[in-house]
Amino acid sequence: MDAHFAETLVANMPDAVVYADRDGTIRSWNGGAVRVFGYTAEEAVGRSLDVIIPEGLRARHWDGYRETMRTGRTRYGDGQVLSVPAIRKDGARISVAFTIVPFADDRGALAGIAAIMRDVTAQFEETRALRKEIAALRERD
Image (cartoon, rainbow, N blue to C red):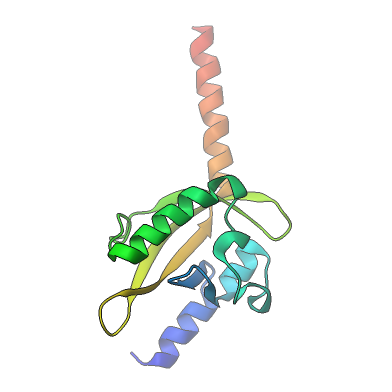
């Protein structure tokens, strides 16, 4: 596989692929990220990940991010799928499911993290509605 294949794959995949450096500054933002979050690459690259993290979750996110960069270890680097709230450019709150890929520098220290994200808002809302319906049915019994 050549570099062109990998670049084309990342650029054109429908899922958001966002790479942030060790400081949490966005360095790569694909077309899927434009679709999911509403920011163009020009608007997102060079900015903090805070543009997609809801304000109430930022402290927790940054505590974990800094610890991962400091230690080089993450609980989520083995393909676990995480689901978290995120925000779009228009301020809409969405749910995203994602996996991460840590990137190390030549010395083995973490240089940044890529996240592959999918908007799962519709599925999240459907599951929540079904849970409410089940709870209501149980109350009637």
